[in-house]
Image (cartoon, rainbow, N blue to C red; front, top):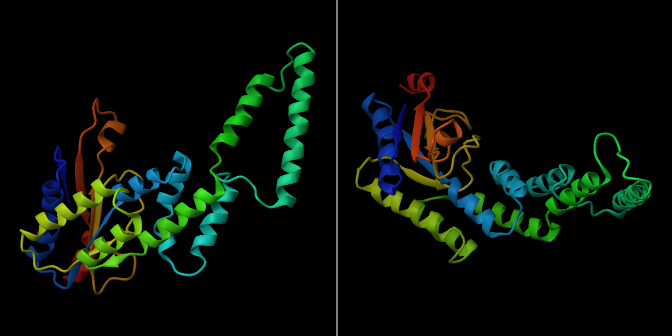
Length: 266
């Protein structure tokens, strides 16, 4: 594979995409296609919808599963509730929780009046603040549902770059994720100058399954491979170098070829 460290422009993304494709063509692999997504856009879209950081990360990690038709949306919503991202809405569940909290807060009041006793290793103030923090971290169910529906519509968009971009822009409006969509469009335009003769598709549900990607992601797919398998894949990870100990943030993008699958395709 390869890493391009220090480049942050659409031309840098296009160079990496081109290199991944040219490597396959050089060894005689044909009948493959380039599938491109943009996790930076999905992240920017979620941030614009007013969700907590926890909810944004959860939906970002659920992007690939939300591509499925049918009950995927409800399954993800219920999973968010079970993880505590949403407050309980069913009265049979909510009322006992409310009663328990009221009893605990009443007990805290009595403890405080009795001289500042502690419960376990926490003081009453610490317990109260912890409870308030958990409540504050719960997202508004309607806002979360609206965001979930929006993400579902977006991640299910795939196809020819021009039509897919137009469709997503229609979904999200003129402001949400505009910078990221413009950058993606510029990357595809820069890529066209390489004259690769490789079919290119956009897939806004392409997540790659690795949390450090921050921008363009891609895979090279071959007609002989099973679903979920690719000949190569990678993307932009601008925060990774600093996360691994670098003194400053450094833009970077890379990919790997799956050599065993490349040999099989040959």
